[in-house]
Length: 295
Image (cartoon, rainbow, N blue to C red; front, side, top):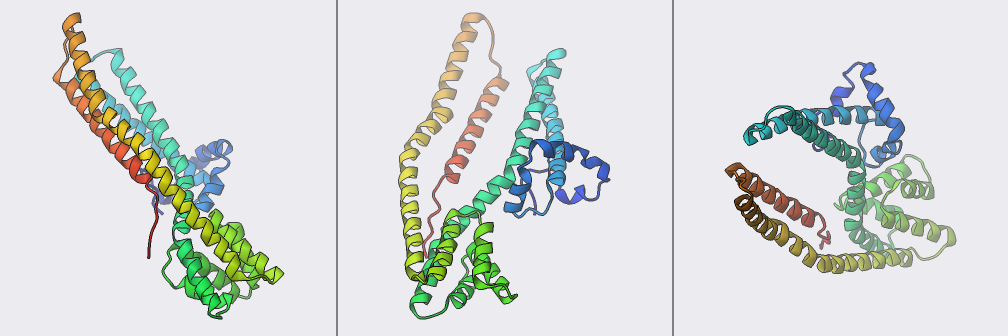
């Protein structure tokens, strides 16, 4: 799978000489938990390959950042040693930023998968509960849920059905899925099923408690988002309008009193900075919208 913002594809790592993987082997000692994040995110690469590709990609960003620093210094009319410092500083910042992003990406993807499971799980469980109440067996209910179009949840139930069809016991297949799942609610639902099957209790009641927990979780997410939205609106207004306007006024006053001058390029950079801040805040707020779906 493609890694967002990674400029050096993972597929090319395997074509390089194995001697290039020494970077990944050294970094693997530091980021020892990355291999588990890669497994959880279903990224088909081992930790050394991924770290090597991440390092090369971050190095490319370093060169791009250094080039941007040279352009910035040229626009500002800066020459001499400060040009090197600006260029190196921006390059190192780009390297650290994107290398950290590459390292965190598998964990982010794993959490997104868990969230996607929780989104559709409530409907998949309701589907199974209706079938169970109609007298359909658990195996057939899971098989039907795997074909019902519930996204990742359907695929997870499909894996359980495939394991059972291959000869694995029903309890063993469900337990295997529970151990591998990173969704707390899906894991809880499967363990509830296992406990009920072993004790002879009602599967309908066990799954009903998980559905109720998911409903409460969605209600809390909506309330929490409504409460924090006012804060994000305030931050957006301050960063997009108040601070740039007051900042420009303050700089103009200082330039008039101190004899310095503010150039047109300075105003352009302030405007670009405010625009980037707006895009960042809007993107951040959009990522925090609770994903509550309805049938």
